[in-house]
Figure 1 (cartoon, one colour):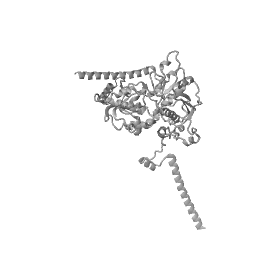
Figure 2 (cartoon, one colour):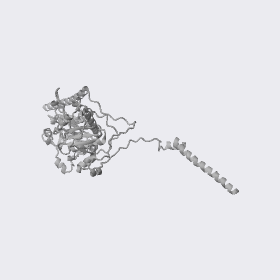
Figure 3 (cartoon, rainbow, N blue to C red):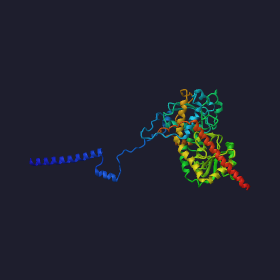
Figure 4 (cartoon, helix red, strand yellow):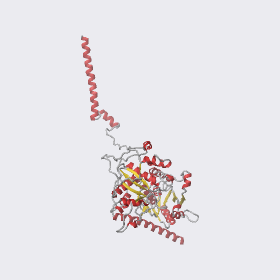
Length: 504
C-alpha cells in the first residue's frame, strides 16, 4: 500500500509538471499570435526580414471568361454566363481614373450638330441611305440589321469591336440605335444642313470625315485585324512595332523618306511615285508599289509592318480617302512626313505640325520631300525629337484601353441625345462574341481570338475631358496653321538659296 501511495504521488507530480509545460507552450503560442514575436525572435526577424506581418496589397485578379462555344453550338443562342453588370475595383486607395487623352474632346465637337435638337428616330432612319448596317444595343445586348455587305471584312471586324466593348464594360453601354457606313469617304455634307431653316443632319458613323462633312468618326476595323492583308490586331501589332523601333537607332536608319503602298487607288499617290529616285533626280525619296496579290502568295514576308522602321523618314499619303496606315507610320520613331491631308479619323486631330510630324505640300510633293529630308539630316536632334514625339503619342495615347474608352464615351454622349426609346428591329439578329468567333475560321478566327476581351475591366474608363471653349479651339487651330506656314517659309527660303547658289 505504501508503494502504491508513493507511485501515485510521483505520478501526480509528473502530471502537474507536464501540464505546466504544455500550458506554458500554449501561452507562448497565444502571446506570439496576439502581440508579435518574442525578443529573441524579433532580433532574428530584424536580421532576416522574411515577414513584416503586413498583409500585402495585391490588385484584384482580373476575371477571365473564355468563349463558350459548346453552349452556342448546342443551342444556337448566345450564352448567358457572361456578367451583365460592371463592378470595377472599389478599393478606396485606388487612384481615380486618369483623364482621357486630348483627342477625346473632339467627341463634343462631332456631336454638336445635334446638341440643340437631339436625335430623333426619323434622323437615324434617314442615315440608312448609305449605311451598311444598323447596330442596336438594348439591355447590354447587341443586335445588328445588315443592309449591304461591306468591302472585305470591314463590317465583320467593326461589329466585333462593338462586341468587345460590351465585354469590357458589361451593363455600362447605354441603349442606343446607330447607323454605320464602312465606306472610306464621308457623305453628310455640312452645307446642306446649315442656315436658320435647315433640317438636322442624319447621324452616320464611319471611319473618317473632313472639314466639310458631319459624319461621326469611329475607330476603324483594323484595330481588331485586317484579315485580307494579314495585318494583325492593334494590341498585338502595337507591341511588335515597339520592338521593331529598337532594332535600329534613328541615326543608323537610311537617311531617306520611305513609302510603300498601292499607288493605283488615287491620283495623289500616282503623283507621289514621280518623286522616286531616277537618273535625272534624287528627291531623297525611296518609294515602292505594294502588290498585295503577290504578297499573299509569298506569305506577306515583305509587308511586315514591324520591320519597316528602317528609314529616318516615312511618308503618309491618303488614298481614296483617309488610310489606316497612318497609325502604323506614326508608331515608328522615324519622322512622319504627312502629305497635306483632307480627311481625319478619331485621333489624328491631336497631331501638331513640327511637333508630331512634318507637313508636305500636296501640289509640290517632290521638292517638299527633298527639303524636309535635307532639313532633318542637317537638324538631326530636332528631327529625332519629332519622330520620338509621334511614337510616344501612339504608345501612350492610342493604347487599346483608350480606343475602347473612346468608343465608350462617344456612345454614351451619343445616347444622351436620343429622343426615343431604342428597340430591336424585326430583321435584326442578336450577336455576341460566340456567334461570330465560334463560327469563324482561318485568319478571321485567329484575329478574333487575338483581339478577344478576356473579361470585364477592373477599372473605370478614363475621365472625359471638357469640350473646347471657342477661344481655346481657335487658338489650337491657329497654332496648327502657323506651324505649317512656318515650314512653308523655311522651304521657300531653302529653294531660293539653292537657286541663287546655282546662278553663282
